[in-house]
Length: 186
Image (cartoon, rainbow, N blue to C red; front, top):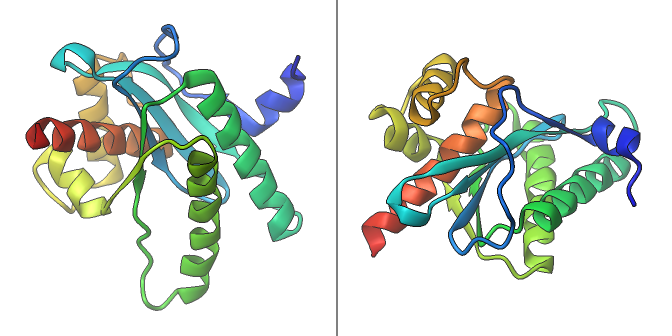
């Protein structure tokens, strides 16, 4: 049995959160917005052609400590989500970093790498999407703001308020991008 206090420190669910449904869905998509401090995740069931919100939240990583220790927290948090929510596929946002910040890109690459490793460990297929493609698929505009993305997610799932933090809305947007992409490929 896992220690609830320890689990809560690593992972918190977004508010508002849809209740969990049963695991092992065939069309369950886990969307990921990678980050080293906060990684957003959103799980969507896509059966019946209409996406349904299952759960969303963030994996929080301490701001201090060695890089390897922080990556370990992220990896274990991802393993926990994958184990509990049993996604059929994982959709993850590609890295975006301004050329003036190469260090940020390298650090984010480490975070994205451990997230992909957690998926590979469970043999879950992964799909990557550029941030502009994700934004365009949800809002029709590849340069949509964080607030626009949060509002689009609020409307899509009929939520009473936009998801917080924005990482959660971004993760749900990645899951929806994959949903729309997979639908077009059928």
